[in-house]
Length: 358
Image (cartoon, rainbow, N blue to C red; front, side, top):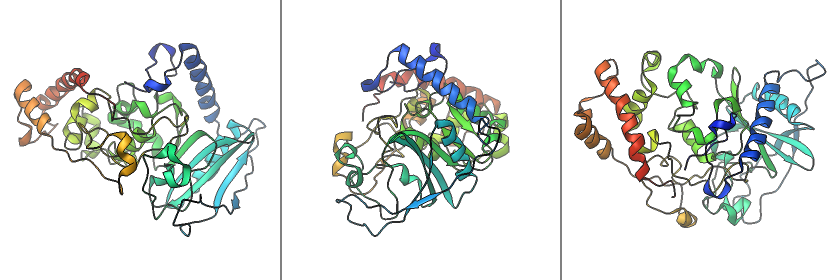
């Protein structure tokens, strides 16, 4: 099933089977998200017209008892605010001061908003809740890392912010307009483009009724973390995004899952339900299948990925469209581009045979 909360009630997509909400509730959520995004357009200025002053609090804390490598640690850093609007300003304050890989997590607890400053991170693994640190609910992450020195904070998850250079200019490229459209393979990690706040050097996810592991895939397979979408560079402005995805991503992903918006669901739930992304098989959710069921993830060691070959894509393109993709798919050839766009619709229909259940 597709997963999203849209800002336009008439285009609402279903969420995870366990969390389907009524239309009335979804309308309320959509209205709230719209208000948040509207306020965020003025994120650096509070209602008083003066820029707020923030202090980064630095506090000591302790790992959960089951965490063995307790020496892998650093003091926590965060900003406390009273409202969501102030929290958005706190994100702006923090993410305009990046140190290495930098992101933020805003949670609500004890009637306050805590925005955690995750700077100098080795990877996005700070957006994961591990079994040792957060309990059996997060059995799908049994292997505790040796380089994540801070835990995912407790509380209701409100915003996820990530630094990324030249973020606001991405829509000069058709591929990014498509990537954040309702046809996107990754739509279940944001719901609609309007729920994401795009600033010059960072972006903020505001819709937490979305899939954290699909967000990770957007950053990695989608290449959004480093402008690494494809090898076409500036030429990408000329090509149809559907053709570009099939030409560049099908060595790593089943075209049916891409066109049909059917990633395998391995997060356990949404950000709003208290989950982060899942590390085992996190780069395999658009592959045809996984060698383990989700319920078996608790027995895994490390962060395995599924093997994959693009045999299906190669054979289907030859059988249905008469194209030998092993000879290359140069989109400069308009005939190839047109055929790949037609193939996208074919694979979208064929995706009905696949399940999202891992």
